[in-house]
Image (cartoon, rainbow, N blue to C red; front, side):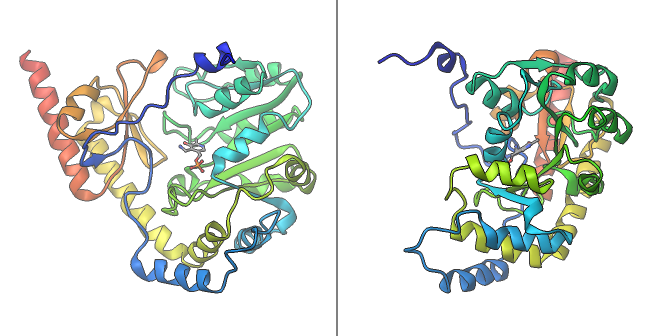
Length: 339
Ligand code: PMP
């Protein structure tokens, strides 16, 4: 037996497993669900048969999501995290390669490569916006174009007119809106106009369910149908579907938390305006080579590389966590100035 060279070329799974009391490295919600919401989920669980497989196409969760949007369940697919859906989307459509726009979420590249699908990269412009014309030029022979808006790790929304340029090519466009709740803007309604648009969303961020693993996409029925032909049948369990149903009932709570996170995001940004890019998400991109320094203070953030070498991505945390971050970064800047 020999592990494929391609597999060896992927980075080992890297997690700061140490004792870091402040974890601002994974863009999770810093707020767990309150106990009264968990109790509601437990009530739902009581009624479920744990001995039976979950619904083969996750209908209970799709119905709840469809109701939330005023769509039909035929326009909704649910996955074990948005991540699982990306795994299928890289190979669902005909074409010679997928297009990505680095620096962006690495899983598009990862799953394409793992499936032996070439990746054509059309880098973001200097200001981190996508170049719609450049992508459209390459999109003709592509199976799909992946665009994250707001983008991870740069934090910015992508301009609608640039996205539309890509949609007008007719190639499948996966618009990853994992952080849309923090931006207050979404293009999901364009799925009615563009049958080639797939809007990807997740419960891992604004909805506080990263540990439960639930993501979904909104798209035309043909795409949803195609996806369910190839998707693992039981990857979304009954517990996950119960949690999804309950959190969707409490969107007011999600909105209040999103508002708090945005308030905190802007507070951090104001403190380090010179080094921090504007953000439409629940994290900030900072031009500060402070990764090791912060680890030393018990604060885990994401270290970036390549074009973003010397930058860190910092998830907005709870107030006390952000206070610690601000204190530590102030110290970092002082030490840097003295040294
Ligand atoms: N898209 C983007 C841009 C993300 O940052 C993430 C999570 N980091 C995901 C999708 C997937 O999230 P999940 O698998 O937790 O739904």
